[in-house]
Amino acid sequence: MPPPVLYVHLSLEGGVFVVRADGGEAWITADRLDAELEQLAERDGTVLISIEGGRDAQPQVHALHRRVIGTGLPTRVLEDRHPAVTPLPEGVTRLMAFAHAGRVDLLADALDRGAAADPRDQQGTTPLMYAANRGERDAVVTLLEHGADPDACDDDGTTALMYAARGGHVDAVRALIEQGADPAITEAHGRTALDIAMTEGHGDVADALRNMGPWT
Image (cartoon, rainbow, N blue to C red; front, top):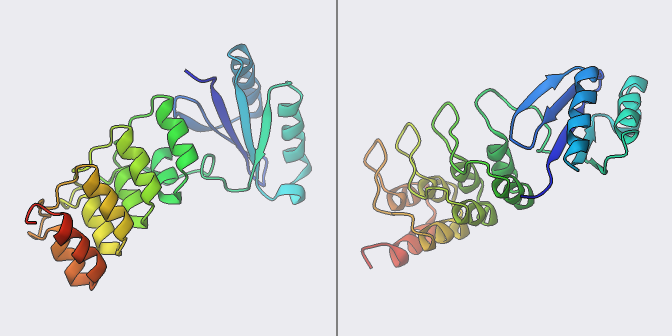
C-alpha cells in the first residue's frame, strides 16, 4: 500500500477543502487541518495542495499554505482547480471527475489505493461511462483493468459502449469491445450501440462495431 496522500484546496476566501486517502472529502476548519496534517505525518504521507487565485490569493490563504509547509511534510503545489481537489456536485465522486478529465495518473492512484471502480451518481452513471462519454480511451482502459464492469447500465439502460458510440469516440469503442463490452445490449428504447452510432451519423464507429461485434 503506497503512503497516504491528502489533497488540500484553499479557496479565495480562505476555506479549506480536503480529499483524504480513503476518498472522504469535506470543507474543514484551519484547526481541523492541523489535526489532519498531524495524522498524515504519523503515516509518512504527502500533501498535494492547490491555491485558488495563486499569487493573487488573500493573505490568510498564503498563511494557511505556510502552515502546511511548516509541518515538514512533502508538499507539492497543484494547478488551481485541479480535479483532485475541486469541490464536486452532489452525487459526483472523485473517480468520476478524474475519468471525465482523462487523468489516468489520478485514476490509477485512487484505484491502486483501493477505490471502488464502479460508484454511481444520481443517474446511475459510473466513472467508466464518464470516460467513454468524453472519449478518454486511456481512462477507459485503466478503469477496466481495475475491475470496472464494461456492461454496467445507467438508469436509462445506457452502457459505456453506448456513451462512446453516441459521442463518435471510435478509439474508446474499440477499447471497450476489446475488453469484453457486449455490443448486443439494448437501452431503454431498444437501441444497441450500433443503432446509436448510426443515428448520430458516426460511420467510423458503426464500422468498428460491425467489424468487432458478435454478428461478424
